Image 1 (spheres, rainbow, N blue to C red):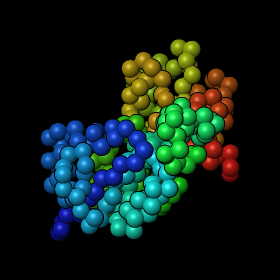
Image 2: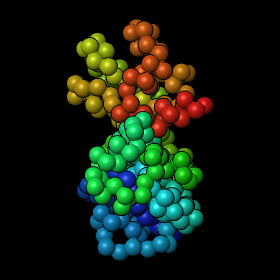
Image 3: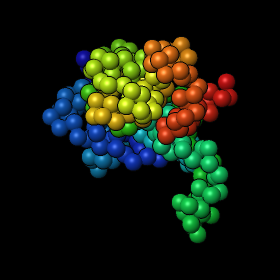
Length: 251
C-alpha cells in the first residue's frame, strides 16, 4: 500500500463526542493505525503536526476565527472529511439560527457578551470551505467512520446511504413512531444508523440530516398514510434541520 496517509483531527464548536467515538474504537483502533498515520488528535495524544494528508473536522463554524482555521486546514489537506452533525449540517448549534441573536448571546455569556466575537449563525463546515466527504450522525457510527477511512485509503468512494431511516425501520420490523402517536422525521432523514433510536422505542431525531431532495427520496408510503409532506416535516422539527431548512428556503 506504500506510505500510510497522515491524518489529523480538528475540533470546532461542538461537544467532541464524535472524536470520543473514535477514541473508543478499542481494539478496532489498532485496525485504524494499521492503515493511517495519526499525526494530530488532541483527544488521545500530545503530539501535533501541520503536515497531514487527510483532515477530519468535528464541530460547526461559529466565529471569524473558525473561518480562518478552516481555510488553513483546507489549504494543508488533500482531503477534508466533516464528521458529526455539527460539522455536516450545523447540528444542534444551528438551533440559534432562528432565534434573536442578541438574546442568545446574553443568555449564554451574560455580562461577558462583548468579549466574544461570534457569527449570528452556526454553519456546517462546507458552508465555509469545500468538503470532500461527510460522516453523519450525532454521534457518528464508529463502523461507518472506519468504512470511510478504509475507502479513502483504498481510493474508493465511501458508500453513504441516501435513503430514509424508514427503510431501516421496516427492515428491523419496528412499529412506526407515527402509529404510536409520535412525530418522527425518519421519512426525510438519511439512513445509515440502522434506525437505532426507533429500535429503542423513541423517534428519529434527524441527526444524520436530510436525504438529498426530500421531495423525491422521502419514504412515500409513510407520508401518504399520514397525510404529510416533506415540507411539513421540515417545518415541524428543527432540532437538527436548522441550517438545511434555511438553505432550502433560499433555493
